[in-house]
Image (cartoon, rainbow, N blue to C red; front, side):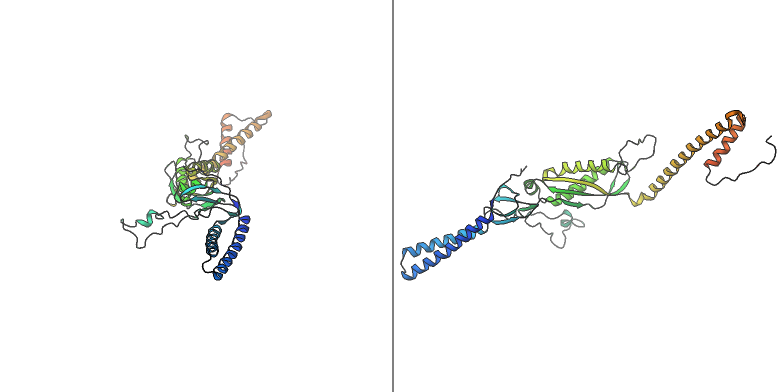
Amino acid sequence: MSVEKERRVASGWPVLALLIAATIADVALYGASIGALVADEESAFGAGTLVAAVVVTCLVVVGFAGFFTIQPGQARVCVLFGKYEGTVRQEGFCWANPFYSRSLGDGGAPESLAEVVQGNGKKPDAEPNLPKGSSATVSVRARTLNGDRLKVNDRMGNPIEIADVVVWHVEDTAKALFDVDDYPRYVALQAETALRHVASIYPYDHTGDSSDSDEVITLRANIETVSDTLREELAHRLAPAGVAVDDARLTHLAYAPEIAQAMLRRQQAEAVIAARRKIVEGAVSMVEMAVDQLSVGGTIDLDDERRAAMASNLMVVLCGDSEAQPIVNAGSLY
């Protein structure tokens, strides 16, 4: 595994001034050598001066090739003849060894397996595009990966649709460039794999069975817990590529269309049952309160049969779906 090494380089402005001075001196050498050769064709001074001017010209041209700039949020990887020398993170106008590679070469691998094999194992009509040589300059800014909607099975085997968004940045440039072939594509593939795994270890929602406890973590009810699990999963998977995960959240969560209607009816039934339970609990307490208050002080003396009849009538009135129609008894109570 590669490890990033910090490398300090010279500021480009002093070197630029030195190269400009060398260029002026080189022009003067060319002038002196030409003047000496014109005055005396066999002048050793003129020939030596010309050779020195040519050498200075080569050094100046090579020296100008060592300039580069690093913007805020960028880093440059220094590779000298295939050997990693370090990573420059200082911003501004810099100068380094002109022989540091500006490109890390071609990967030589197709973009995806689907571009190579189509149909019954036949090659596509057009040749797949090969990835170009990756630049030695790497962005270390935060990036956002908005994942596609995936159809997966939750822990209970129900098909669901799920999507996420991942905020990440390159933390170790050496691992990102040398330990994986294409780190942005690696991040996208690992994000999809991690999301599928996390979705498969949690149920979508509580099943409503007596064995199902409210403490069970579900995708719908425990978004923060699921997001933390997804972030930890991604951090573990992306560590070999030198990528750090800043945040990971679910952006879409729903049942698959083929079972959405059935699950909606189940949720509606659960809502009706919960509402009925509340109504019954409230009605029972109200009936108890009414019967107790009527019996206080002996104002109305009810035997067990009439007490049961009153409780039954009050329960019907309080728990009924439609409004009760009162019947007034104008005759004797007995």
